[in-house]
Length: 354
Ligand code: ASP
Image (tube, rainbow, N blue to C red; front, side, top):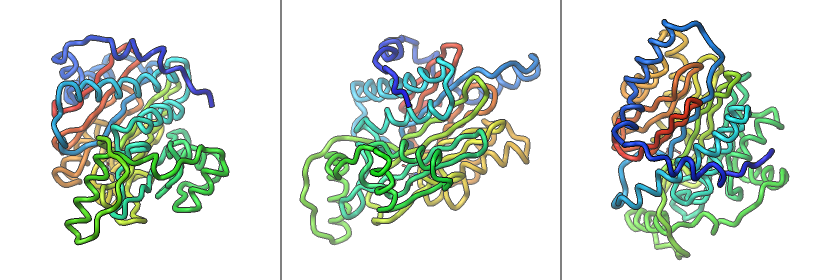
């Protein structure tokens, strides 16, 4: 697959100065629902316009979110949006766009995916990821992978080449290596903040401290949803899981229907939060069921799952339907997120604003 020159478009995204009041207003989910409802009634159906949204995880704000740190989050989210936009604006597919956007977030140590993944209680790194193509309900995932810097691309390969939807453990690592995905050592994933966190959890559990290499700050599972100009929907989600998890624990992110889902004509969803709850409730698929069987809008269905089905503080989602802009919902204190649409709208938010 062609890798795009992100640097060419990033300055445009990063340099775009839009007043924050305008951004917050634009991204308000109620506004989004209202405007798309009006559009649906007023206009005959037209060829769908492309759109993309990304998230960098839901949770509480850990550490001090200084203006400088916040600016870095905005810049990285915009870079991920730019990576997806380059694909979509060029007539590329939604599935390529979500893979590119998530790769970008996996490469940044700020997030709990790829490079900045959280550690297990043993201090190892076991990563989960999945991708879903709404065109034909094609899906691929990897669980507990230890050697790939970009688990989302291994998940894509599972989808495209194996006829399976999920590979796990050492065999997933073997598959990644056999498919030519750069194999990295576990040191690649070490970040200072993650290690500190594990040391504290081990002390609490009465376990001896681990020997520590280094640390860097990071936060949040990552994900993307996209719609291409042909109306295809796709979703991708990637994570290190929950900090201090048992080795072998698998979360919702690699599971189609739990933390990730895409179905053409219905919705694409990427979730973040307490994976066990997302699995118990088939959270991402439930958004689709509410749309298909209860006639809810994408916004209403996402809201219903986050605020009524899941518990308070369980997490958040980004969703995108066959028409209209992306939306997001979360019940945690914050979720970093962003969206870009074919009409030139670009929004990134990192705090608790709607
Ligand atoms: N959902 C992820 C998991 O449970 C964690 C997260 O989104 O923060 O593995």
